[in-house]
Length: 354
Image (cartoon, rainbow, N blue to C red; front, side):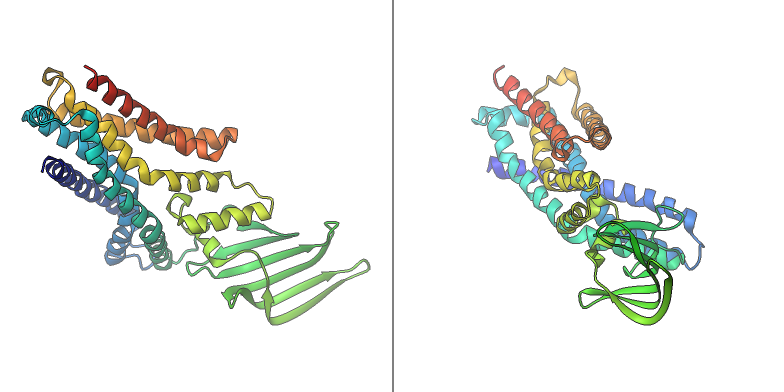
């Protein structure tokens, strides 16, 4: 009965905080999108749909923070009403309370996996497609000349990537084994059909030792390691891609001898991030056993907010340092997690032995 009561109290408080944070971030996103209102066909309805489709991504981002704040609030309420004292007198040690509440953490771990891997990638892509189509723009561009991709011995320049992963103004520079330029192919449009890219309106320049031959082709095929799902990396941020697509994109970059650290860091964060709700509960439980003169439930809530902000800042700092100094990708995801877990375990042992 006590275990069920604890889990129910924590679950209700976490869900309340989660709903509040969702509403808050959705409002901020709406206010930000108002700046683009009226661009092309981007009207109020499109803004509302865009914000609604970005909500799963926001939920994925804020679940650990919601778990931390909700746990701090719940443990503060139980401490304030002396229920923790009664629970401990019933034979529940701090370790046993933490173990009991791991069940709530596991629930939010599965929720994080489902939203982060199954819902967010599709909803985020759909949101960007709506905005791009409504504002009559392309996905984005790394340079004024578009995107540059290494594909085997070839270099590919794509000027425009459309929301449906089709391509416009494609330039393919083909080199031989000695890296001598042999062919320059330019296509107006490209679409992935039946396992290969179908190009239209192709102009091809074949470079021989003596002359350059130009030919024009209405339609043609282009076999490439690049796949439409990899275009997702150009549409949504790595953190919101699915684990499978991240893995495929990393393999593609490695096969073409391109730097993949940024995406490897995102992949490791994707793997480790779902266990954060469990760690946040372990971190929060000991705060219920501070002396009441040290502050009530709202003070513990304030500590939770500060801890959550510190986690986000530290996590971002480690990620950037990892990219800057080329650390092992798993370190940037593992270090903040281990620090929070260590602090939580240390406090549990300390208060247990008091």
